[in-house]
Length: 190
Image (spheres, rainbow, N blue to C red):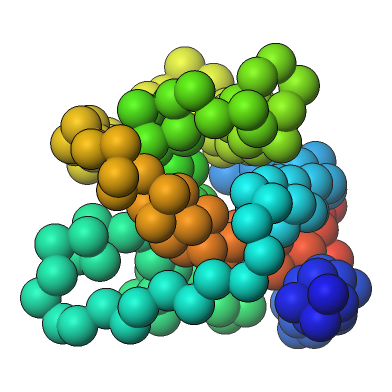
């Protein structure tokens, strides 16, 4: 319950920064991105499987499962100054992350899960990721996507832990993405 409140506070307290608006030609629909990313954030927090509290083991460095997980980092230019100067590297990073999670949600890790049935939480999450990803893709221009590897088929005994790890990682990713769009909508929209 406290986690949900923390996410809501993050979404309600957008970064503040003074600056000029980016020209409409290079600017995404910040307000629409803000709405979609907030919806995605809420869906990511509600998509957990009903099983009570589970402590995930801590990852040790060098584990292959943590190397491929997309993270929004300082050099991606998602800070207020970076967004004001050139928002494209940040938006490309978010786009690549959404492609990554879209593939995972469509993989065998989530196959047969009741929450995947039409209109279930994971299905809604998948649709929301697709909507935000399409918003970020410029019309008539395809960003060069780093080759996002298809998920390696998993064993049935691995899937529960993998689902939890994927959903937690997705929660962190979309929380930062939602803050980026909240800042963009507040300060960069024309």
